[in-house]
Length: 370
Image (cartoon, rainbow, N blue to C red; front, side):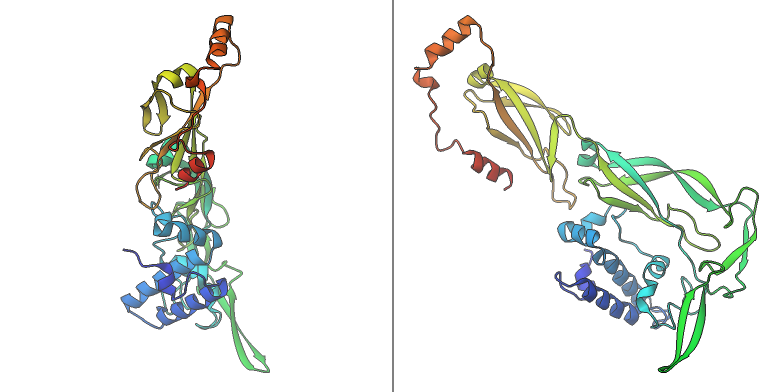
């Protein structure tokens, strides 16, 4: 079972953003690879702390985690999980200030290695039908991303000597202060282009269309974001590719309405059908289903079909399909029909006689949310 993010950082669920940041900085300094060379356990703790901080430092991701737990980031992840060292250094390097000589001493090659920058992320939107959301789906999308051109070569940046950053020492009243900044010549890559093939841009990149497969878990909702690692733009030189961020959009179903994991269906029946009873075929996400209506069914009755809703994102089974029965009252009657109902006005079978088992509107609403 995956460890709780709050436990990893040693904070409570009510911790403020400042407390979460402080706790992450403390953990990351404790387990930083420069302080623990060759220690695989420390490196793993370093990665866990960064992964926890990535989620808990972002209000939207934190809210999803608080509601769904780790299940919100499965199937490719909605913004977290499986972070590598390049991800950590490129995203959170500034949180350390001067703890390691003005920044991390190495990006991907600890203790003075070349810095490895990360390519930019790409963002797309994917529309899903209710059936796809209910069951999960694998989508194949075409993405135009930047990749290194064939034949391009790079050389060590002469300005920073491959470090990716330049260090400046100044004398102050507090003593000598050392600061580090990203190298302006190479943009932090530690390398500059040496040979640029025809058709490549200034960084030696070309645009290429690629088909990307995206596994989308069941139960996702409008606005959720799925991260496909390494399918963004490549970075020049020895950099690592960015990520593909997939925003989820939903296509409205013609007859079914979603509410969390439950689905709602409005079923209209005639007055005679309500009186005599009938069977009806209705829509469900798995196809058509047939339900039986008992004679004398009342308008407003809610029939619950268990397990016919949407699969839960946290893996707790399926929601239900709630069928709302609406008895359709005819607006126009012929002479014979009108005479019949006029005679029935005094008939005791047509006088409303609600029983204790006939729930009120408010009780029905309460049951829907229970």
